[in-house]
Length: 565
Image (cartoon, rainbow, N blue to C red; front, side):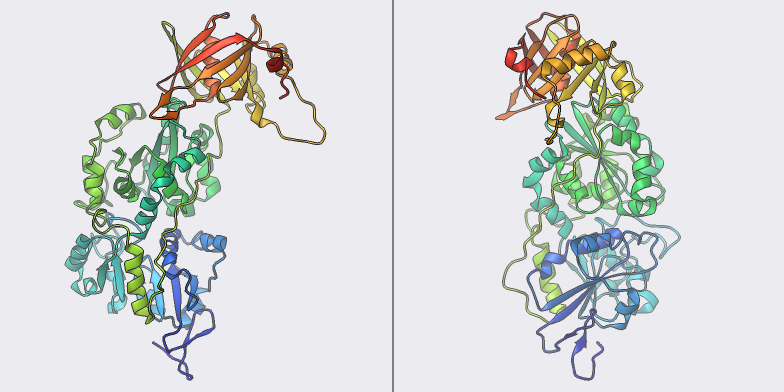
């Protein structure tokens, strides 16, 4: 390590760290957004230690470096230009990709994986058929030394590395996976995540797309909307996790435009940093290509995993991801989803993930502690006394858009009214169109047989004009000749509505109870059931999302009719 004339080492931010073991400089070198996110998961290792200075730099040369430092800027961390980073000497350099001219940096280098399972190879770069992340050509560029520490998640990965390069494997150590431990530690927040997403009791089906020509979005770009058009809105919610490289390649605007039909149907598009893992924790099932996200889901939740990968040159045979896809049901067409979910065998995913991560029962939960011991050893400092705290995942952002109109299918079965709602922009046979007034466009409002509004759309203002419930319903029926039923959603269990030929009715909804919980559905779906039944009935048994909801109808009171919206 280079030293200055006064015996003190230079740090990356221009300051001096004492050479007597009382301080250390750490450079986090990221080549892409995904590599940066893995490095950010490592930060708790140095939390609370004023002896350690932390600085980031962008390793040039990647096609996916556009968004690489955006997360660093959001958290207010300091970054230095690559040229400056190459001039200084650091006590430790931490990376999550072996690619790039890392040999120009001065200081002991630590390499973390930026995925799970080392399941891909990219032909045309590096050694032929070598797993990305374990390629000796990148681990030891120009015949130089391997990293001072190559941190891995499973003993089998050292064996794979040793088969490629015994020299590189000599510097490797099994520490576990910090990202998986964030996911496992955040499992108790699953209900909070689902509440933030507005999932309720619906099944959250998440699609995971890696990057490149063999990814789900490249090969099957229409699958998200095909599922959105096929799945009833009150039974299912869709989510999508897109690899950060694809976010960088495409850009947020272009990606959102390409996915607009599915987003308009209420699909959740997880943000590439942290949000993706929160959505994964909330999921009930995963549809995946050959990207490693599925291994995290399998290890943490062991829910159904469906394969949407049709083969190619990138997936390495015998890798954990290849084993998972080989035993997971294949999803061909969107209409085969329910059948594929039913054919999934419990334990398939966890069995495959066991060869990618340390066994949860014996070793899981201490990856950061093990990493801290290794990193402080390399820096030459004693670790802090306080234990490392795993940072829980954040609450995910809700869907950016929700359907404002629904194509409603109704089936009458004795005294039961079965309701299935689909996005209003889907071209499918339906009993009627239901639209949310003030949210849906005028064209859909003019075409709707059922118009409804929600009281929570109102905002306080110094000057305002407010409808009464009765006044608004009468106004809508007068203004929209095609509307046969108008209603107001007052609460999750209370609506007031009127069929054009009838009188004002109070609708009280009795939600089902399941395992000590009360399960609410969208009251607007109950209004669709009421709309389909003859006027004058006193009770409607609605089947929505596979659950029975009893709706009790009675003449609206003066207080209900006069309530201000």
